[in-house]
Image 1: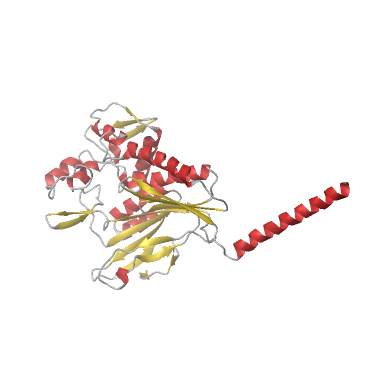
Image 2: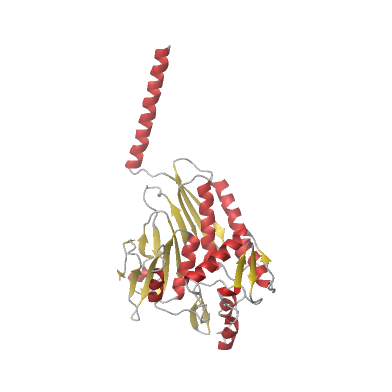
Length: 354
């Protein structure tokens, strides 16, 4: 009897080893793993999630949880919702402390941290400036007068808001904030952390072009992120991407003016506003893509670097070694080229890297 038990144990061990060997062979031969894809809408845009695993996932339950997370974030940070937390704060015309939710406080606090790191070129207090130039839920019409801009600049500036425990304090009751430049990135981070808490390792989370990922894709390779190439008449500029980014676990965000702009009296203006001058930024930068540890960090830095010229941004990143950036630039003659601050590897670039 004891001999039979030992025989069965040996057979079971052999089967286990054969199965493990078979699974290893599958991976080595490049047979794709299972991938679950979840899509939806949030923050006026779309989201896309990919989860790679060796077993089938209940995508319905995950989508329900993700949608719930994103609905709450939208209720907190959407300036388009008059009953959102940010809209109520913007209507708060007092210098008394205003109690906010933990998530709202965290995003504002990060925004002020980024303002300090970027010498004020990232600024969440630009709500009224954006409105003056035709952006946001309550846009004005026509090009604003210089006096209007100067008037708004009097109460614009990250120094006009204080974070105190779970309260925010306005130094000027007229000051209003806009978190769109980091809210999407924060949303990506929250969803990413939620999936991590469920035990998933190989994940790709994208909200409106901002992404964060870890592990590998279904072919056991690093995830790929396409670097968007805005269309033009030149042959190269008809291609959808000017290169592919393949890096290990990271977060990536891009800021550009060709997606969000207004036509004011025949003048095309991008949505990036210089928070110091109050005017839309006009430069040779087409887009800036930032790689960072979190998507909120990448989102904020991409906005800040878009507000500076290329040389200013490159110098500023010399003091912030944890941030990598890829600029797509265009010369006066229309020639496009790529610049990076960390010799970032770009797969199949269609423009020169300088």
